[in-house]
Image (cartoon, rainbow, N blue to C red):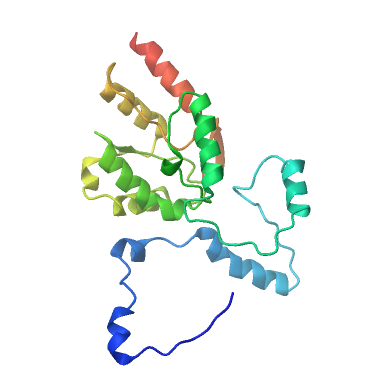
Amino acid sequence: MIAYSVTIPDFCLKYFQMPAVSQKGLNMPESPIRKLVPFAEAAKKRGAKVLHLNIGQPDIKTPQVALDAVKNNTIDVLAYSRTEGSETYRKKLAAYYAKNDIHVAAEDIIVTTGGSEALSFVMGSIAERLADAVIVTNDNPRTEDPDKIFADIREGMKDPDKAYWEHERDEAIRRGVVAAGREGVVVIAGKGHETYQINGTDRRHFDDREVVRSLVLRSR
């Protein structure tokens, strides 16, 4: 990074004022991991051994071809990528989806890293705008307070009281399927292929597909 300073004439200062941070931005919660990092670093300096759980890290090894590409690269400067991610990569993702009969344009794809705390209010905002009805439930709260997660999502909604809030995921799915009936479409977001749910330190079997299949068979 190169830092430099310039002198701005007084009459130009009004054009260079930083915009105010929105209330949603001010209310956005800090990352729990970032809160713990200073304590971990201080413990290391005292000579303590810190065990990193690395929650969210990949469960499989990085492909050797990817590691080799990094080791053997000839890049002189690793420039910042575009905010929405590499256009070439996004086009390849769109082509892959098309092969699976999912038609989405590269312009509709954003490549980013995980940040559930920052995305909570965004999810609430999008769901409220695009869905006829919204049911908010637990995914994998782990050691986070589920009520706090709900509060973060509410921050992004204009009228959160119109949504249904249910901590028990199976009950939330049941309500959505029943409300949609035979003609409606239900989008169950969050867990995807996972077959477990972590609440606190308790890990239990939970599969969205099994819950839906049971509800559908029961309604026949």
